[in-house]
Image (cartoon, rainbow, N blue to C red; front, top):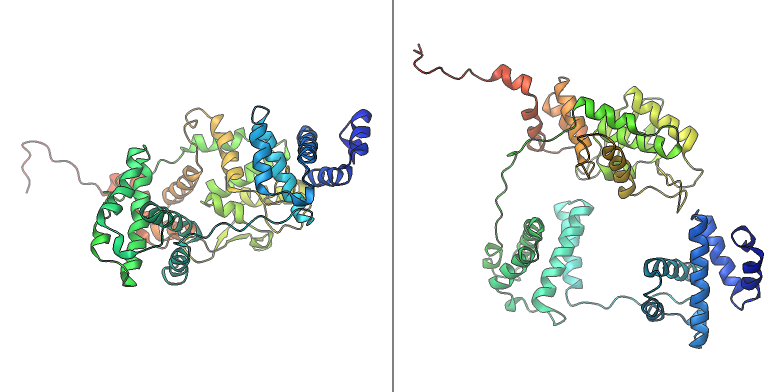
Amino acid sequence: MFDKYFCPRVVARLRAGPDAKWLESFLGHLHHRAHARLTVQSYVRQAELFAGWLRRRRTPITAVTDDDVRAFIRRQLHRSPATRQSAIGHLVAHLRERRLVPPPLAPRAEPGDRVIAEFDAHLRDVAGLADATRLYSRRYAREFLRSVFGTRPISWSHVQPRHVRAYVAGYGTTGRCAAAGVAAGAVRRFLRWLEFRGRIDPALVAAVPTFRRWRHAGLPRPLTDDQYRAVLAVTDRATALGRRGYAMILCMGDLGLRCGEVAALTLGDLDATAGTLRIAAGKSRRDRVLPLPDRVRQALADYVRRDRPASDDPHLFLRDRFPAGGAVTRDIVREAARRAFARVPGCERHTGTHVLRHTAATRLHRAGADLKRVADVLGHRSLDTTAGYAKVDRARLDAVARPWPIAGEVRS
C-alpha cells in the first residue's frame, strides 16, 4: 500500500522502520475512506513523527493516552497545528478501532449530570420535543448549573433570582444578544420543570428576563422566480457533485424540505413507482408523504442511477469524498446552496438554506394552495406558523383591501 502514495525512497524508509505494520494499516484506513492523495501523504508523515516522538519518550504505541496526544500537538504547534491535530486524531481513532490503543477515559462526572438526564427524559417523553430542541435545552441548563455551582454539589436553596438574571445577561455582555433570548427560553423551561418537581421557588421562574418577539412582524424573504431559476441554472450538472447539489436544492426549493430533512432522506423514502417521497418525523413529530414534481423525480433518479456511490449506507445522498459512501451532513447540504447563491447577483447575502423553504412555500401559496395545504407540505403542526406566507401574496391582499377614503368624500 505504501507504493501507491510514496516514492521508492520513502517506501524503503517506512518499511524499514519499527512502526511499518501499523503505519501501513493507517494508510490503508485513509485510502479506504477516500482521502485526497496529498492528505494521505501528510497524515502518514505526521503519524511517523508521532511514532518517533513516542519512542524518544519510551512510550509504546499500545499505551498512548489523550494526554500524550495533547502534549505532542502542543510541542509542535509551530508546524501546521490543524493538520497535525487532525492526522493524530484519525490515527488514534483507527488504532482504537483495532484495539491497539486503550479507549479514552470516561468524562468526569459533574454534579448536575443526573438532573440534566432527568430533565432530558421529561423533554423527550412528556414534552415530545425534537432532538435539536432537547440538545439546546440540555446545553443551556448545564451552563446555568455550572454558572451557579461550578463543581460544588447542587443545593437548590442556594439558587437566587440574581443568579438567573446574571446568567442571561452574560450573553449580552459578550455581544451574543441573539443567543440571550434562546438561553432565557431554555432556562425558563428548565426552571419550570424544577418548580413542577418541587425543587425550587416559583419566584425563580419569574426572574428569567422576557424578550419581546412579535409573531409575523416581518415578511418572509423568498427568492424571486428569476432568482430561483438562476440558482438552479448555475449548478454545474456536468459533474456528479453538481448533480447531487442540484437534486438537494430542488428538494428544498420545490418541496420545502429543511436542510436536516434532506440529509436524513433514505433510499426507502423514495417511491419511484408512486412518485412520492416520505419525510420522516422531525419537528412536527409525524411523517409526511409528498408528491414528486417531474423535475425533482428526474433529478433524484439521475443521481441514484449515475452518481450515487456504491455503499451499504441507506441514506439517499452520500459523500463522494472522505469519508466516501457516508451520508452527507447538514453542512454539505448548506454548502451546495451557498455555492449557488454566491454565483447569482442579489443572492450573495444568503448563507442559509431556509430561504429555499420560504421560496417553496411562497410559490405554492401563490399558485392557489390554501394555508392548510402549505402547512401540510411544510410539516407545520400549527397554522399560525404558516400564516406569515399569506402576507407575501400581494395580489390576493389587494383584492380584499378596502380603498382608502379620499379627503372630503361623503360616505353613505
